[in-house]
Image (cartoon, rainbow, N blue to C red):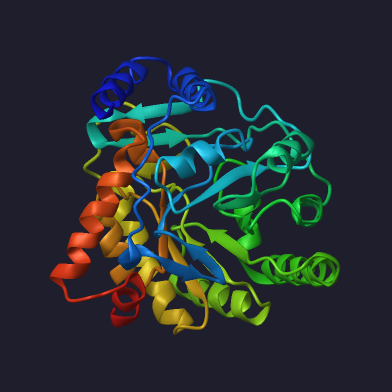
Length: 351
């Protein structure tokens, strides 16, 4: 079966990137995805913001924007799955072409612009699924929203009973002005209004963890400000980070200078460095989730040693296929044992 998935992955990469993604989603919905071994791996189990995860490897937002395949990806071995980014109203996103493979660099550049089918269709799919495994909702703002912060509140209110956790995504570079919410008065207003909405929802329907996803393109002062604001407003974790607008000098692909956010292998060093800066700023007061450039057990372990309680990936699957997560888990267990750690938490704290 793994050989068949490898052949399929190579075949899909010959298609236009967006067509390949649609075909992958269709195949997963048809039950053609890989199935990971069900044997428990106690050394990889983690508790994240009150969520019990069988392993710390999560599927990052962006793969399943419309909550069509969370259970298929859990079956593929992910410890948790984040669907979205979803906005209150459906929107088509930016003009095509807007997604580019940088195959020589094991990377992708996208300028999709939160293309998704909207909150109601997303909510209906979550409502219809069996509640097995941890599935989070990544919420965002419509490009033309008169009150962008209000869009985040709308997402929380509509989805509160349907998801296991929520992520407010303010880190996409492809919605003009969205990253302005990461600083100053805008950040304080966003987190304050989210806290108010959350408090009201928890009184009615129980607690849910709420995370904030931030960009890797941050200065030290911004990192410290975000960490303090997130802690002050009671957030449960920071996801560090999204795609980068920077371009490493060593990129080889002819698409390297396309406009948009860069993800994949070239992001690993930058995102891990920023993650470690958030660890230093947070001083253990808020959980961290490491994202950006993970394509192996070594990469996942580096994020954990930099302070992450869990990690997320997406781009590497384009080149390695969805079976990648099983290989990462196996390698991660080996690295824990080699360094004398019994659990992920030990490795993260010891950093």
